[in-house]
Image 1 (spheres, rainbow, N blue to C red):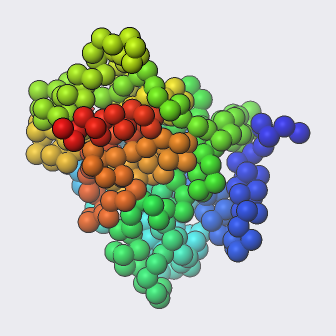
Image 2 (image 1 turned 120 degrees about the vertical axis):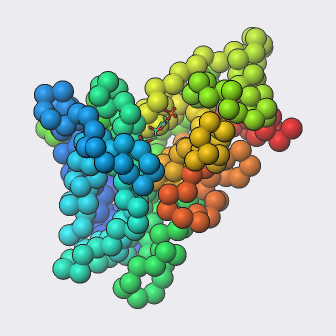
Length: 335
Ligand code: FBP
């Protein structure tokens, strides 16, 4: 039977066999996260028909108005993952602090970090949205979880991925052995392998950024945009501009077609002086994925995976995508 079409669980088990020391705990953890994503996908698909569109009226730790589907996704993941006995803690974009595992449940050696619903500003307009996740191993001794277990640099992730709720529902993940994409086959309710060993083109033709902030950028950032919009057919310039405004969707397109996605720092909002996107639940997991696909990710100076987090909701600038395009950006930003 061809490789196409195996289920994600079969794939996880084949990945597990690559690690004879593996206990199966990680496979169990991801298989439950997949169930949570199927529930979120089902709810998102009928969003226009049920009372799940719009805002809850609350504001989250980021100062953003919370969408009903945000909270549905957040509570669904916590409910499914808390009782597994594989986690010692969780971090959600929607929670101010580390989410401890209730005492009534067994605890494990993994930390799950997630953005339950990325692109929430697009929910009501029926535009692609997603869930992003990152998994770390507990490093401190004893049962109690400490901030050192959570505040780990991206290169220490044992797995990362996202679910994309779009024309089809997809799962893209890595455990460090290549990057693989699966498509949910609604008729059987299974994620089937559709994109094995994803590799991003070395150089692209598309750049993705919210040009609406250009008046708030530093000159070196504007120089980057001048580069991608200048007329130079020999260099394949100008690039085409695409921007959905859902990180998962913009990243997925960049992964498949190549090119570059950027969220530079800007002076429009003091909170975004260091960019808008969250290091731990958005930038680090996507950076692990793009690296597995032969691409690169930087904050303009440092590889995103080498940044030591100071706090769980830390924001960083993000330049992610095809290797040659990221290298070009770092050259320009250095000037
Ligand atoms: P959340 O929806 O998880 O808060 O993510 C932030 C986000 O919506 C990203 O998905 C997207 O890339 C970015 O913000 C869009 O920001 P802006 O509207 O400033 O361009």
